[in-house]
Image 1: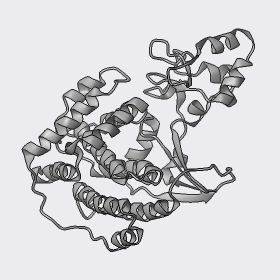
Image 2 (image 1 turned 30 degrees about the horizontal axis):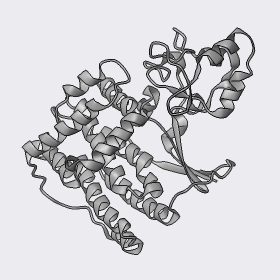
Image 3 (image 1 turned 90 degrees about the horizontal axis):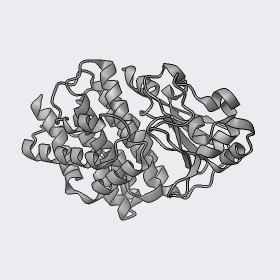
Length: 356
């Protein structure tokens, strides 16, 4: 088995009670079957507590029942009662793995850390050096995966090209993202017609465009307003998130660290682009990534405090990526609305260039 991961992946270690946020609040924690069996066998008062809070939700998943929005095992000092009482090996897969994420492609896996974790966000966004990747052999067993192997290999080549575009610092980050949209839009049309040889040649021959970015500002603002209203329809997991979103304007201030947007783009495209090998929806993945970058940059625009910017980016990921309901809602909106068209996304990114 081969596993590919960003080089920063191995830098991550949970900082436990020193964390400014907690992964044990706001989310429902899904418990895998093996862990549920172990919990049912625990004796004593703690075993009674385990069985009392282990519930089955409306989707049939086993979960720990939230108490005032918190995991019942989250102590006031920010530590985990289960970890303290039963040790690390007692953690269910959700708790053991977070913020790591993994996707399987037959004899290959891809692994990363989620932006929704404050410590992971610091690791991803603090270092200005371009993000690199490593691949290593592992002893992990092969996991059967129902994906299109031919499409997967094509998407690997396409993503390598996309990373080279995103990390070309001789151009503005928005120019780079526009090129990614242009490449992806044409590639998606070729894939839908199963023209894989033509698609591979297109990737190989694609040249970065030189153009003057001139935006239709009212159109850009209307599309962005739609993005915000769609996000406001989602469930808010914590605090004042909807208030922050509702006051966000499109690129309302100068962004001081362009490499942070570059790193965001690499993060999102590494995590989602290649998963089109499962459903063939390449352009849907690209639209999600680009709109997320636009919303996050707008959230952080004009914020000169680097830690505050990173915190906003982490909040977006936590509120969006780690809610199955919110992700399903956004994917539906993106699929149905013309405001997420490649043309509208390009117009928004051009608006930024036109306003510099």
